[in-house]
Length: 455
Image 1: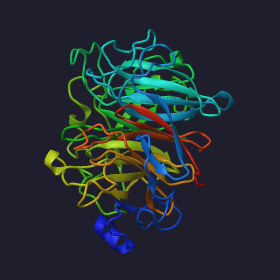
Image 2: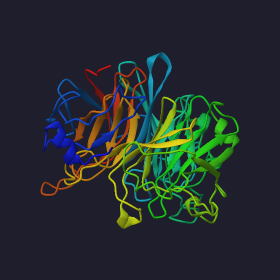
Image 3: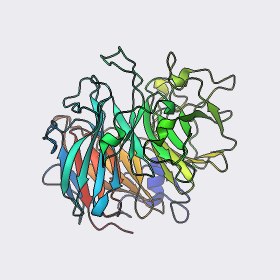
Image 4: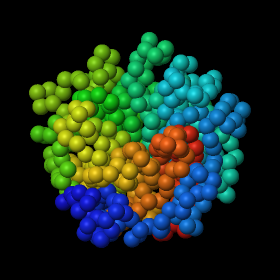
């Protein structure tokens, strides 16, 4: 069962240390999970960084790979602002390709430079950049990978080593100066961006996309929607005409469906870890292009559809897909309040289960609220980017269900009297598992973190 933060702390004997986790990912964690106090696991306390950028445990080191406003190595312009979702993909001769989203709106300080052959809408300021690293982790190149898109938030890697970047907007041509409709997914090949170009995957829907995860056996693509206003977003699956067909195969189209949990119109009131719902249904989306009505407002029949606020991170693990609801606020239209959930969907059993609950119940300066981007750690367990108030962390969750801090941002974007810190985003690991890459959203900074990672 779920527990409040104070109950967890009291049970572990570390009142005041800060914790916000309850639950377990059964196929990722060995044995029953029991939330523990920070410092009982992980890599020890965070050491203040004399450079004022990133606090890490002793023995860990970081390098800054790229910062917004610096010159792109390609000479195409400055490094764009608002570093968000990211992936690390294998390249030739031990190289690593980092593909990085830029969640830019019309007011972005540094838009993604428009490059012929890679630009969808000249009025769009978002897109992706790609960094290629050699086997020693040194940056060999940095270039635009797709441009002219808008509000590129997260996405997900494909089994064929490309990146699906997601537009977290549904503005249409004529709005905000755009010349084309937005709200699509685009495929990005970091090894050769011109191979994928700037082609919207329209059959995958036009909505406020956040992230995707692909079933590596069947090719089903799962998609989250981070809608800003009630009724909130939906959880989708896309059934491709050419599943697992390789680069460009998703352009062939397919069927977009939304998840219906019978009798559950809103996931936010479900807050007991382990709560499960069988008989999950998938309903065809009436109009995937949302020409006149956003998908979440379309008519799904008298039984309706299931909504959730702030559907963000999404990933595949074992035989299941996981997705994150970052928070829910009843004042904004949710049926109940929470500070973060992770859900597991089992396609074989058509079963949805609440497996993790985040959130302090009193002090938002303590860690563990509003999980956002999330990834699997090489030795099992999770890395979670925090996007809440107060200090911002990357948290690890061990295979035993213990929570520990791995990094804390130190770049103050507020004032000395009222400090504030940019959120973390895009946490991902090199294919060999030896380096963690993570972004600070503001000021846009990409870090490579190395150290004595445990297996």
